[in-house]
Length: 415
Image (cartoon, rainbow, N blue to C red; front, side):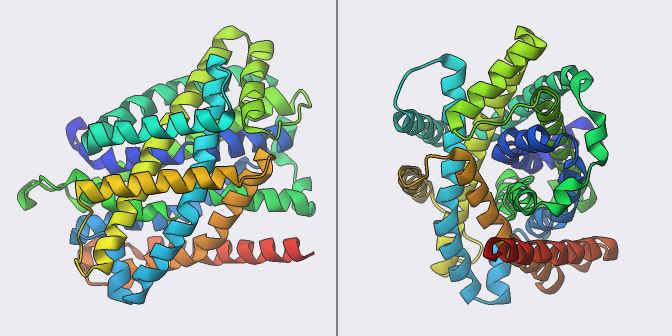
């Protein structure tokens, strides 16, 4: 596979990586390392593995049928479109609120600007929407590739510098399995790791958007598309491990407890790197963190707006339709308003808020993963493009394990 073909194939996956490498990595993976050392690295790898089929099925279905996953949901049962729309409007603003708060906190920590936190969040959201309206998908594609390359280099370098301080004995510690609070954190970690499962719909939309000007004769083979997506997904998993190493080396080894506030946590991470590893690693960590959140903000708002637009088109009976530019702009603004409303209602404890948000997303994960499995195995599409038996088995295993974890979450909460 030549480099240009790989770039085309990896495009939707890289945008997904930009959306995924955010709260799950910077906040949750770093906190996992800070609280448990390397004990949860295996959990991070397992979660990424089990959720992989559900995400890849979004790309598979779109490439094979030229329809979004929403079209597949409609084929399964028309009422599913309304159910998915209700879920998207309910939980998307909450997820975007978590992302926006984290981005604003890092910006404040980097620049030292003294503005009310909510005002800073509004500025960050406004800048994101303006960039999307002016640049569109093409700008998003190029920005994601550039920032992912830069943050990968910065994150790997910072993690490598933190390695000598890691307590390697923590990697084989399983004490957390007997701690109910630790298990609840694992569920919260899984919620956004590597991203909310609903972004499988966004992947299908980005796949179609990247191919809208391609003739059938110019389309890449399914195998090439899958390899491109896998490479981007593997990078996403690897960087999650790097952030866990950063937390383990800088915070866990020094017995430092992560702060609960958004701005405090961002400032704490940057200052600890400066104190323990020096100004250059601290600068790299700060730049990597900001790049992480910029890509997440832009890709998440874009995916959410396009997803709701596609749901609206399906509800209107326009099968396979996508929102017009005017509708896209309207849904961006609507999401921004709902996002700010969620932040106003947010608890003061940022860590608790993030755990709540990610836990909600994880509880919804098994249902969405099951829908994606049914779409890829039962809806109309070329047989040669359906997943292998091994991939279907991995998908079902993930659904069973995530269902069991959701049940565990409710049992622990009730207890």
